[in-house]
Image (tube, rainbow, N blue to C red; front, side, top):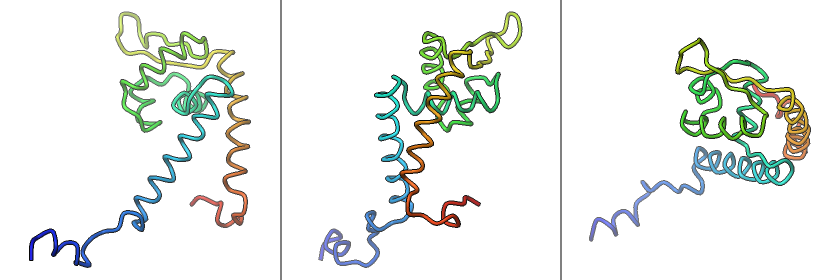
Length: 141
């Protein structure tokens, strides 16, 4: 019997379709992709932009590195999206100190306005997504 045949007949093969971490990862991706598509269609932004803007509402003045940690994306991606958000006048990025390479970003008045619109869209999506769950099931510990 070959190694392949032994594995095919083994109980030691993990079925990723039934593996809870894989299921949850897939669910999270699907929710992010569909949210990103809706945000893009509604206001021309994506889920990464939404996370950046939300982080800046909570803590204005974060650096790209800090935003990356808070939003769970790498700094290079955050930096690229900050550049776009700056061009759209939703975010203002400035040096942390004179003659410094480190920057800090904050929402502009236009950024706060679009954030409010995005917040409404996201909350509506959340209500639809959580419909049918009990209050106890909705509570995140």
